Length: 505
Ligand SMILES: Cc1ncc(COP(=O)(O)O)c(C=O)c1O
Image (tube, rainbow, N blue to C red; front, side):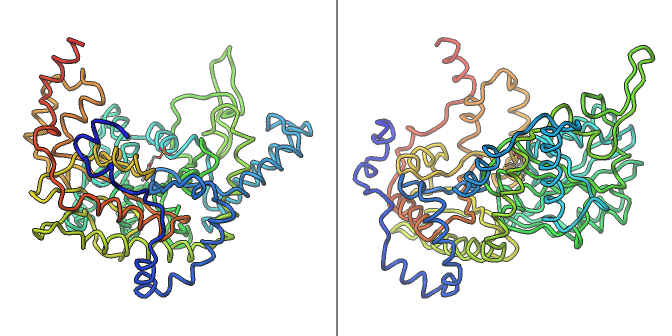
């Protein structure tokens, strides 16, 4: 065990490994949530398909970071690769034709999975959700007088589109979310949607928050569209636990990363574009694969049709078929079973954490966002406090969890708007930061500067999670009851001192 951590938290040395099932807690759990039994199939699946988790005593609580793959997904993909011959697609030779067949089959399967087809949407394969968002940002026809409206609760890859908007002279407006539930401030959003003018107006929000787990109301899609907005729905954190039904809700653009849904393959996401919006997007360049005609002498070119104009160069033709395998895998389990299991475990986690009180009655943990499971997914954020209400640094919680083989995530989760909301950061404080030599600071220096006042600990459950994972985390959290942070040891240094030290070093 790391000696500094041990010195600061000596009680951790005595803590037993957390994996042992706790019969009594399980009995109480089942008594409270008898419907958990109806998701038993997941225990069989975990044993058969994810045994590596338990044989290596991992407690995986980072499903919003990345999903986990089943053994059979890998076997099916390997079987496909070892039995076929695949050439570079988009030629008529037999091996090329074979690749085109399997990639087009995957493309159609993605659309089918989201209950739509080529008639209405196109599926453009990208590197990940961020790749999809960048593609949209650079091709959206922002001009002076146009507008990009987005919620405070957004991943940085959605926030980053504002730079494309700014470069082209368009304005950006943020619509706030409200504590403690961290849901959209409806009256503010309605006002923005109704009053903001522009020829091209793009409104972006996440179907589910990657930080608070809040499922935002999808009625905003149609509401905004009726007022002349194009709508980008970032579904990256939503689709691992929910089925996006594009017959019910029809955003103009949807961003997705497949590894978040079923763990494998990494390196593939997609941008779903409504057919009637394809010609609205203007790509800033052309590349191999995106054009039907290019002349060097005349310096003219024509874009290809539909998805072809957005996929630069050779697509990931060996891994794209694994997306179809992954979607079929999820379907074989059933999204309802996944939802039920995640929802029960999330409720158990939230209720149990809320009961952890120091002997003086002070809570160990503050959870941000909804404290129930209504319109929320399995992502829960929190901070830890000692009996004197001193906040633990999230990096210390992460280090201590690492020692117990618990994989959770800490920090701001690429979602600064939500972090600024829950941490109640003031404009003055932010101004103080950006007006000092911010650009010269390394990542760890920035973290040190903010850590005492910002950031949190995120636990996210997914389709493979079970009672024991949650219980392991509860035991870990409980080990911090009635402990005291040695004040001074954990205080972050002011930025100027950090700079001095790093220069000296
Ligand atoms: C809601 C949301 N949007 C976008 C992204 C970006 O996904 P990726 O890193 O796969 O590009 C993430 C990643 O965590 C996310 O949670």
